[in-house]
Image (cartoon, rainbow, N blue to C red):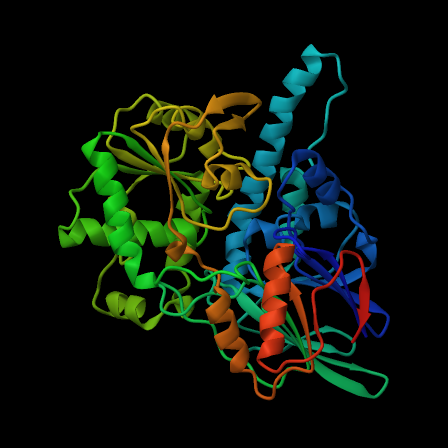
Length: 464
């Protein structure tokens, strides 16, 4: 038994961890890497292992940095099952189609420039046709339902509390008379956030693979979300500006909509137009309604009381067409525009930023982790000049960061969760964090008494 780490090690995004058991290969996640354009292109297009040799995929959740390269895996020869929770499987249909659309549109845009310079055209990493070949491979499972993955490998999913359908993957492995239980957190969520349930406690792990996105930082308290958001929206409304919120269509958008709706309903904030400029977010909202098994007690109580729209979805304006999206850039504030992608690397949010970043009345609200070298990171760090779609802009708009919205556990929450593991795992691999965060978190785990805590190297394999 061995594991090789092919993504999201000493960096965030692009999760891919290859497990070998009884000569079979099982892939934990298959995500897109996000960062510098050239590096992203190379890492995502060219897989470091033969796709046809992978027996099965175990998917922790639907976020594109964990699932977004599945169509390329299939295009490259993979034909096995893709195991996921039921909610994750339902989310993947609109999400992968949207991702393919973005790949196709981005390449179309680039090829116009290539044609002018007489350079050869590029091809998308994958297309809608590749997604159509991928979706039939999905194998949905209920939480806590054991299933066979490969000879010597049985799995089940526990709720990770990160986004709808997110899972901690538990694998019971047997080879050559040895048995061990491996746990993979995927992205671990936070307790006491609205809509979805808290991360579950698991037990009996021999090996733990754990994320470390915020491995050296603490979030603001979740109960400050309303207060911080109210201040931001009121400030921009007074100067009749626009609030542009880059947000993932799954999880973050629904949480922001929920929080804004509560401010309007309570009378703490005068209503203003709120636009969800993402066809994907419309489809995702429908998936949310179909999966109450993922909701926390408060949300379930709202549903039991007969509240048809506990998330506030019906109070917002959803934008599907490109024409409607473009029209938003001509509208006057005050208004809020929530648009993907969350790290500002693709999608309609880029066009809203182009039209907004040089106007001091406007505000860019960052509500999630921004990976190194992404446009979102540069905005969060308030660079004086930024490039959007090949053009340079001065950043004159106000930028605000509210980390209380993060769906990732912070340092304290990660440590609290690991303390619930009984008995403690004999070996821990720290992944999905920039090197500084991962090393800091590994050191903190060792201070709690855990031994054999490893921050893996890219492409290195470890015997389990």
